[in-house]
Length: 528
Image (cartoon, rainbow, N blue to C red):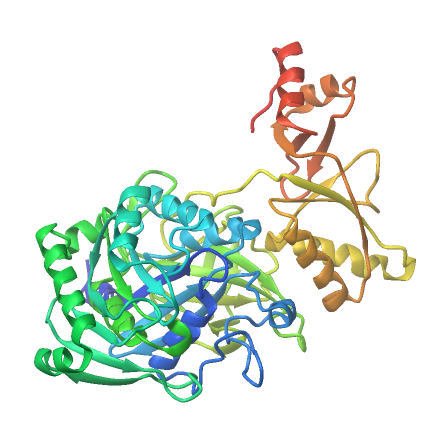
């Protein structure tokens, strides 16, 4: 191997070691987008946090760029932000928390090296939180837990630790511990150093919190019973062995825990510092062939998200690509693993919410936006050098179905273009029904809010008003051509073609009906 190649590989390895790529995940309303803003604020890449989705005279959060998100104060799509902090490059992926958008969240989790899970201090572990922890466990993703909203009334801190351990099987190892119960938050003790940091919300809460380090004697004198309680709880934690172990954290068997309040920027600096110090950098990544692609190998990456119309002036389409190995250079010609065809990367950008800047190079862990990448789709692998292909991304079976139509015949071309775009982004699945024809495609979704996003975007971005006619189906299973012929004789059953891959989906009103039909036709192929 030449000295130039060795030097290049070493440079890539150094750059990869500087990256921290993580997702912020949680149940809806636990504060993901607010935390995203707070982290960016502490890295000093924005001047003020937008916080609570533009309440009052405050701006909407940077990561919630879509009009529907800004109007309704919810995150309905994942967003990427990249910024530098200390000597580290942070790639932060904000995710939608609503269960209806689980597929988008799960795709994001394939593109990160760790996750920050937010728990609402008053609500603890909620259903979506449990599901996300389970996904992280299956993928061996190390998880840091941030107990959010400690400035409001909530559960006892030790009770939350017990709940985490008992319900998800991860041993909590608090790195910071609160002085003061939820709703009476004075600050945190760093368990590794013993230093107490008093915290106070800045006026308005949109700027960095006011922090002051205090000695134990000063804290004891000022906070009395609250300080005594906190020190007693720390002794209990030490007795139970709830101390941070880096190897156990990286093996995804423990979860470091921190306390704070993202909306007031309390405890956020501590989280950002610990992410830099403890979260794993990019490492060798498993391929579809069962091998591991080293970070210092030739360039490779995969597309985990498609998004159009982020810039309304240009109406372009962006493919979000996670770089897995090697050095990416704008303009390089790479190979599309699925087609074997060359792909030019002329328009490559760094993403910061809706904002974008052209970049010339990127390294493992980075998320690059490839603009006008109309030949790419979710899950596609790009590589240079020896062929590489990464495993397919997870796909969820739909549970809701609706025929979508427009009565405006002059808008039909825009209607078709919008439907194709939403399908390509994975906002909904688009099905073709023989009995309804191409002018009335069927939208299939994991949750009904996906339909709201689809209809909103068709009108807002394409100027097409549509109507939805919901179908009485709740279950879908893949079948084949022989299965389609068998099912033609069955009532309340329909076979449709999924447009993106021509797969045949048999849809049923409920699981009982599917089992009944399968029982009468033992040769029928039904893959749920």
